[in-house]
Image (cartoon, rainbow, N blue to C red; front, side, top):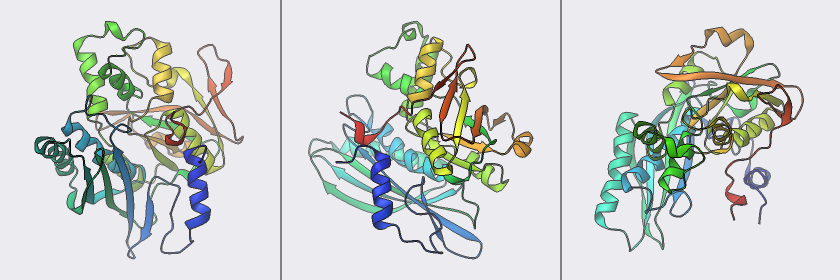
Amino acid sequence: MFRSEGEFVGWLQQRLARPSRNVPVGIGDDAAVVRASASHDLILTADFSIESVHFSRRIHPARSVGHRALARSLSDIAAMGGKPRFALVSLALSNRLSRGWVEEFYAGLASLADRYGVAVIGGDTSVAAGAAADVTVLGEVCRGGALLRSGARPGDLIFVSGRLGLAELGFQLLKSRPLAGSQRLNRKNRAEAIRSHLYPEPQCALGQFLSRNRLASAAMDLSDGLALDLSRLARASAVGARIVEEQIPGPEMVPAEVARRLALSGGEDYQLLFTVPPAKAKRLPRAFRGVALQPIGLMTTTNKLTLVGLDGGEIPLEPAGYDHFKRK
């Protein structure tokens, strides 16, 4: 078996990738880009949501499962700077599922699709031991305007959107495994964290803004944790990265040490990680549609990832986060 998701993707690229001028971006980025016309490119992505891997019916309401299944693919389109247009939804149903569960699943999915202007135009159904959904989304972007992981250069500033680690905090609360300090959370804080996990908001408008104004040199969505996703972006761009701990926007309602761990390795925030050349940084607002845009460091000439601690010292940043192939 493969030791990591990165190793599997690399093997797949060698086995299946066929360079083509009509497919400027294939396997290895957040989504594939297909040349469709003289003015637009198509963006295609697909994501699984599998019971006992991505969701648990004990923890996640069916409406949340449907919302999250579509949100995962929408976030990939957002990372590429595209506008999502159409979706195909394939659903494997367990005999243990009720009709009510299926109705709530599609209610959550359809509600998010309506808000983002996405038409669900087909898919497939089957029966399986556990529930699983496969959502394919097709989006579009101006020709040559897709944001890639491979465009970062040394000296580019690293930005993240939103507050990182909230989704993981919410997940731990839902599992009744409170982290240190979270026992003192008030009702509003708990609700915010739990909603961040159950109903994440893909940053499609922000991705389009960055692409349309040609502000970002590279981008990807934060689905597996900042440390791991940053390592992927740095590797794709053949550069290193240096980030500053006190600038990373973790959850404010837990102790600093816990907030740092959540922000670095907690997954499923579906915010954006992107780099901006220094000359363009002044054109970037501090917030976009109410979502903060926070500089956290810069890309470097080395191939190393480093974290500047609160004491000013630098330590290697381990690419910890969620990796399907490393799950026990």
